[in-house]
Image (cartoon, rainbow, N blue to C red; front, side, top):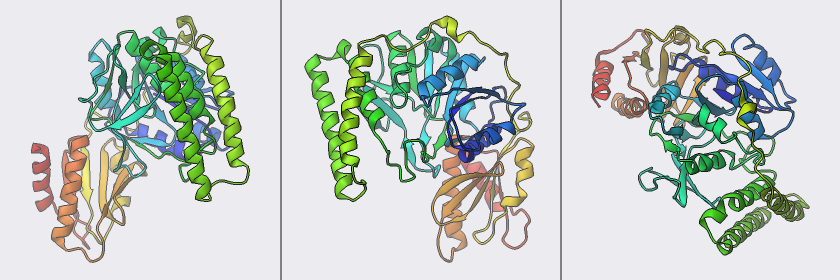
Amino acid sequence: MVINTLNRCHSLSQTLASLELQTYARFEVVVVEGPSTDDTAVVLDRYADRIKRVHVDEANLAMSRNVGIRAASGELIAFIDDDAVADPAWLSSLAPLFSNPHLAAVGGPVMDGTGVTVQALVSATNALGETKLLTSTAALPSSPDSTWMLYPMGTNVVFRRSALVEIGGFDETFEYYHDETDVCRRLLDLGFEVQIAAKGVVHHGALAGEIRLASGMLTTRRSIVKNTAYFALRHGPVRHLYTEIVRSLTAMLDSELLLHRHCEIAGLLADGDMERHVRETDSAMDAAFAAAANPPRTHPPSWFTIITNFQKAFTAGSTETRQHMVLVSSPAESYVSRTTDLAVRGHTVRVLIKGEIHRVELRDRVWIHHLPVSGEVCREQWRSAVASELIRIASIEPVDVVIGISAGSGHPDNTRMLSLTHEITNK
């Protein structure tokens, strides 16, 4: 398990907390720290005896990923971003798929920061770096001959280590954007398989960072332009005429300019931003052509020689007697504080409570599901909302027991909720 982090100490804490709750028992955690200036070191100090900790001096995601591969000692290497949290069944859902000896990479669904809305179910790209989102893997099978291919997002992907080493790891020309896409393209070209799984969920906050504002807007799109062009120049000539490559890159540049024009009209740009964009675009295209004229910035297999032994398993408690438990509060009360001890003992614990919007959050090792019911809620309305959420949860991982809690008593009232357990288990 590799986390590449840079100046996100608060969300990094949540990422690590979610990994403690994984149902997959034996895995190590490698944290690759970039040139952070916040309290990232303080967060990592709390895990000093439980993680491998390495450092890179440059804010380059592909370089950071390679350092993580080098430090990792497992046969499989999973990546998750430092602004994401993993559902408890994440690794348990994806790791068994590697019983297929040809599989080199697999990823699962990526939800947005609410934990409910899909951010990316199936992502696809072609050899020109053009991307699109799909709702099914059936529409686009990937093979070495495919013009389009499926690829997992970098925040939710597991690789076979030996396959990554064989292709030289990540191309460090991709400091940000298209880094995982390039890896998947090269794996497919060597005859490996890349898959998108229906399960194995990660919640991705897409938080503010070095080049992203809290609104989601990027402060600079130089890396997007440069790496789209570099990807097209690196992989396009095998599958496309040069006129097609030029046409695609021209459309990309026109789209980028139009985006900035819209932002300018909306008053989202400061003075000089448009001129800066034009300069950065020229610089990005020059850099892309220069990089494409040289070999990829990858590493020989010997560079990835494992330098440290397997770190002890990173889990919070025993998983031998673990149960997936859902506790249902009444609409008027919340029993979140009473459930942490169950999570500490190794159970996956979810609490369903009334909320303003449908969202899921991790709090003190417990997954809190806010159900969007408003005003005075009658018993049947609440039960309907709970039933829908239980079915959604069970589609991610089977539920062992549902406990209903009566309003005002604080005691379990299981009669109706256990019937729901039977319903969703059978489904």
